[in-house]
Length: 286
Ligand SMILES: Nc1nc(=O)c2c([nH]1)NC[C@@H]1CN(c3ccc(C(=O)N[C@@H](CCC(=O)O)C(=O)O)cc3)C=[N+]21
Image 1 (cartoon, rainbow, N blue to C red):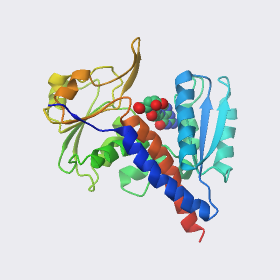
Image 2: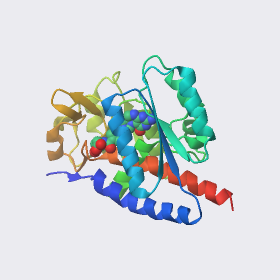
Image 3: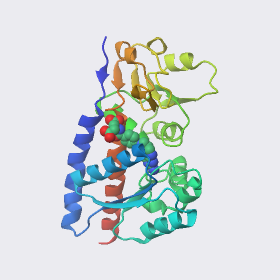
Image 4: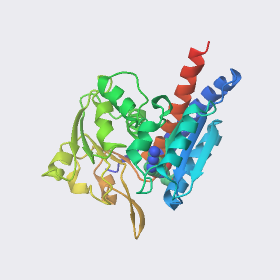
């Protein structure tokens, strides 16, 4: 058996068609959504991700607000830029690109973002609202995972999901989405303290690999027919590698590759969060 590919780029293109129509409708009412990015320093990887986000904005008609800051900026200077975006009516939502240089206090910076402008959905207020089941801006990568599964009709209700990795962008929050009544999955969260990772992965109908360890998930660990989403990424001497070994596609029923899987959807849902916020503001102003 060869797995069906969960195609993140094709799915992203579908989402963009919908977003573009919604942005056009907002523009007809005199509202143009704007996505801000705050990039500190000149890490080539981070710069390339930020470029990608602005290229996506251009595709759907969202304005871009770029704030590119030198690596040696002080905490106070960074927070002044955050305050400016919080106050700027052109900015519907924004992100502070992570990681920040080590001398800066990342949590203090993230908490200073206006929760209503938190396009990542990673502000403590939004994560707290998600835990409480209140309306919240949802984190982009978990939204991407759920959307990709639904797009390819992978059953989620009642499924056993094993998540590998406890990072803030995906591992921690994805269980909060997948265990809502609307998804109804049973989720196990594995990490470096897990005693028998292979056994936990082998029981899963859906595996979300987000550990950032190249090739961690091997074919012998995967239940035949399972859906395997490769979300982790590592820089290796051979280039960028995902968490999922190549031969898993001979066992899995569905696989989301990396690159070309969840990554493009993370970016699409960043824009989606901005468009949703602009629609809320438009509804409030009538
Ligand atoms: N505040 C913040 N929010 C983030 O969401 C955030 C961040 N900081 N810091 C870094 C990570 C990484 N990340 C990626 C998003 C999309 C791709 C992506 O689209 N990748 C393409 C390949 C790269 C490309 O085509 O440019 C793919 O998987 O096919 C990758 C990585 C978001 N992050």
